Length: 288
Image (tube, rainbow, N blue to C red; front, side):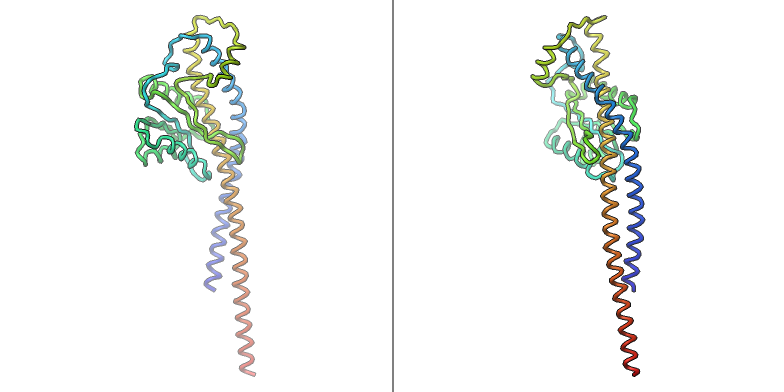
């Protein structure tokens, strides 16, 4: 009977856990719909400003701007976008593992952590953290991205970094998220020869007012803001998708465990009943 009581206790415990994971799955699904809409709306703007900036920078050769300046140093900074919480499968672990494998063996590397999970990991292994941004929340705003971008641009201008890379998880679908590592500073809008040839072929004649330098001084910070804003949106949608998938798997696994425990409970009860019947029959035979 003690075995049956233990099994019933485990079934109740797993059912309670299943209710929690099912609720978390539904909440993540609701949040994912909003985050996915925001990502879809932000992508065309980010692509367009990158295209426009690529053409403008080619038509304004010789313009001096700190965000375009390539430096000889090797101080690399990584902006790492993770979640503040876990329970989202391999979302945080995959991104952190990619960055850790990249910076392993490099001496002059520091990080800017967006999210508690990346902050905790890199603090634990002793990597220098230049800045941290926690508690971004489920509704990412452009003001948050602008605050992060201003801090990073200021550190870059002060010489803290010679190169800045942005690492985040790109949202593909609720079931698929892809870690991505892209160069943020110095700005290189046109990255391939094919893109450069196409941009030169269709580049219109720009008239800069008041000057090319003033125009780029306004657009370049907005470009950095937009890339970080898009990265935050992509990461948030990926987080919700990963959490929804993880909680769905946990709910299914709980149901499977409950079925197995229920079967074990029924077998134990049947064995107990059979034993009692055998004892009654044996007693009756002894009396007869």
